[in-house]
Amino acid sequence: MSEIRLVAATGMLGSGFREETLRRAMTLDPDFIGVDAGTTDAGPHYLGCEDTHFSDSAYKRDLRLILRASRAAKIPAIIGSAITAGTDNQVRHLVRLARDIAREDKLSFKLGVVYSEQDRDYLKKRLRERRIRPLANPPPLDEAVIDRSTHIVGLAGAEPYMEALDKGAEVVISGRSSDTSIFAAMPLMRGFDPGLVWHAAKVMECGAASVVLRKYPDCMFAAIGKDSFTVEPPNPDYRCDPVSIASHNLYENGTPYELVEPSGVLNTYGARYEAVSDRAVRVSGGRFTPAERYTVKLEGAELAGYQSIIIGAVRDPIILRQFDSWLDGLVKAAKKRILAVFGAGIEEKYRFNVRVFGRNAAMGRLESDLSIGHEVGLVFQVTAQTQELAAALMKSVGHIAVHFPVPEYSGLITSIAYPYSPAELHRGACYRFNLNHVVEPDTPLEMFRLDYETV
Amino acid sequence: MARLWQVSKLIRSKNAGPFELTFDVIFKDRESYERVRDAGIINAEWFARTYQLTPEVVQIINYDAASAIKITIPRPTISGDVDDTDVFGGQQHGPLVDLEVP
Image 1 (tube, rainbow over the protein chains, first blue to last red):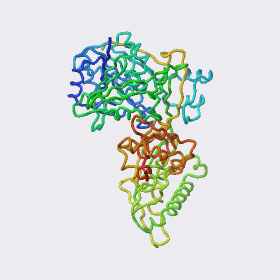
Image 2: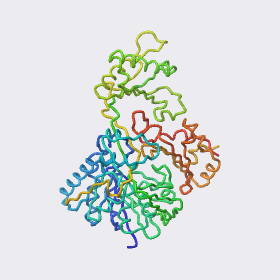
Image 3: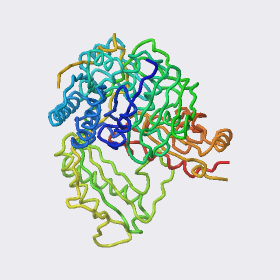
Image 4: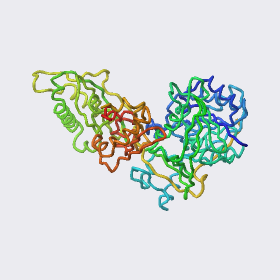
């Protein structure tokens, strides 16, 4: 076979795509439809407690169109990193949605399911064997970190997808995997050059993100040949040019020249990007170097505590002219009040932070401009080991803060505008990403479990 | 002197995973890119000073294929942790926007 044709339904399952664009993409005779359903962008919450980034309605809308197209054309649909963090329960959740759709639309297919969640004893064993290595800027790792994680997933490479497809799966739903593996598996099985395959997969994994101006999420199309691959958006309103495709290597990547995968590294130092029309781009020259040791990246989350917050605004110029000393005094008074109410030892049981919107709320300690304008926003934040304690502490903070004085005024003032009653908002459990490490397994499949069913 | 935003088509920051932060400046044309690149205006010392960092942690990468300069640093806090200010890392590029460039 001289060419393989890929359709990416969108950059993230649930974010949407145009039904008409998928219809057009299917006329290009693709060999499979892939879609990534995961992200760490939105933070540790989704791995911590298995909530999903989008609603079931949004997932079902996208998945229904993908499954219908896949079954009508009799080509595989490959869905990775279900649905946000790729935990086992999130995979089961997406499988349930797929079953519902099959029943409602009278579809039938062989489903391959890949589970990516990691066994704690296995990870501890690999840690003792020194076969877990840190990546850039890693948090400390010991067995206690593994024990206190609520969930740990491994990012599957292309191999579990290849295994499922090899066993005849017509639809694959996987837990956490590298985004590119979803699109690399089938082209690698058919023997296409790994440099071209991984480079094309990197362009495809974000759907229409690599067009010149992405106005809304949509599908993407690529064809991988012997010496190059070509990318062309199936939406006639979109176009790619060599810079838009080359630029995509920058996105969410520490370097545009290298992409580290479980089985090796794609380097694009010698890549060429040429326009083949005013909307299609031919890419060649990416090189894939197989790794000496196969590695599987880990993602883990642990409970960081429970939070209550208060949002408020300050507008009085007299307060704002002495804002730092006023806020400093307020924080001290709030902590003193907490000590008086809850007794000695309480200071070890909570953290109190204040975010100042209008000064450095976006950049925190990276900010060099600490000037303020005619109004500032405040977010008081208490983090404690239980929600009850966080809520109780915040009630003390709220009252001290709202009446905290300045020397220029005599009499009781109300110094903060609270937009809500009650002022306190309870955020529930908060999580923390706690791993930036890779495992060296014996085989690419060792850390993943595959399951099959006829839907 | 022009400002960086006037010669760029995109200036952005974004997580590169939960532990790194990356900045992209994609220039409007090859000429502006080469002028700014060769003037060495965006360098590790300047970036470190502007972002309260040490120069050793700042990686600057020139990317000719897209006429872009990339800067990657360790994230000051892990994405979404108790002290984090920007979970997606998308609003950290402000100080780059009005940088004076040749």
